[in-house]
Image (cartoon, rainbow, N blue to C red; front, side):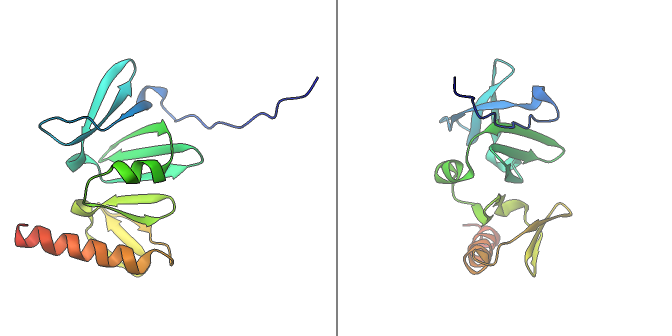
Length: 138
């Protein structure tokens, strides 16, 4: 009888914060939607500061609240609206919440997020373009 290889799954610290992502629903407020504790959960994009991944978990950071689901950042990145920028293999940031870019770091709400060397040039120019467009009102 073949032994099954057990995969270590690291559950979120608070299982109630786990969401099952269904994709993006059309509504009057652009948002990410999924299920949380058998209820539909919608997170307006404007509230999302950034996403980061750990192993197979994607964490959605919305200020003090962090929600998690099993998935891949690359799949999520394809569905996100303009305004979200991939800065690292493990991070996607909302340009509206970026305070500044300093060296190989993006600062959002006092938190420093790493910018990978391979993505730095593209990420910094995309963030600069988005921030300028926002200031111009466009």
